[in-house]
Amino acid sequence: MAPFTAERGRLDSIPGVAHRPAEVLIAELGGDMTQFPSAGPAASWVGLCPGNHERAGKPKSGRTRKGNRWLRAALTEAAPAATRTDSALAAHYRRLMPRGPKQAVVAVAHSMLVIAYHLLSPQTTRIGSWGGLLRRPPRRADDAPRGPAARAPGLPRDAPAGGLSASDRRTAA
Image 1 (cartoon, one colour):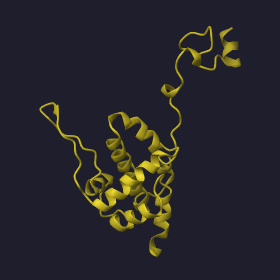
Image 2 (cartoon, rainbow, N blue to C red):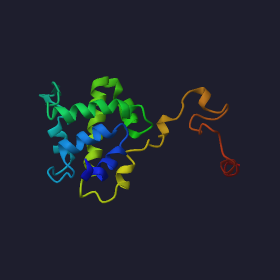
Image 3 (spheres, rainbow, N blue to C red):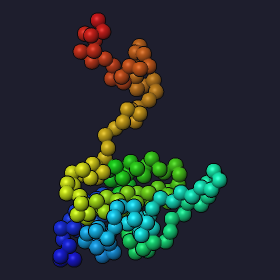
Image 4 (cartoon, rainbow, N blue to C red):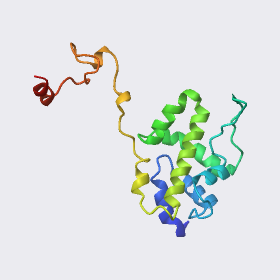
């Protein structure tokens, strides 16, 4: 692994990917991603592409193919570790958890592979554009606490949870 220390260091920045999964990624995919035109064929080769099969308007089995069993096993073992961090991957897992835990883990492993593809790709010159995927996303407005306790008493439904600020009170008066 001595020639690939820089690549392994970049892959270590992905939540849940430690030294061993990074080494498996490099061993199975190589140091650069020139063999794949995009992240989609790489995910298909590994067997982590999202399965969606529909015929005549009826959903059928959306199982993924077997693919590369070593890399698939390494990523699906690293995915639960990524869900215990405060990152976008953990938020992705929580959002997909109602579909089933296995499907959510495969989706997180797919996202980890896409991030690894872009970190190892020679076309990606700036890691900053992918660094946003490694951090937890900012809270959305629909993630705000709900219910009567979240609103200040006497305020209408569309008022912010913290009440009116001083500048809002001056403009309302």
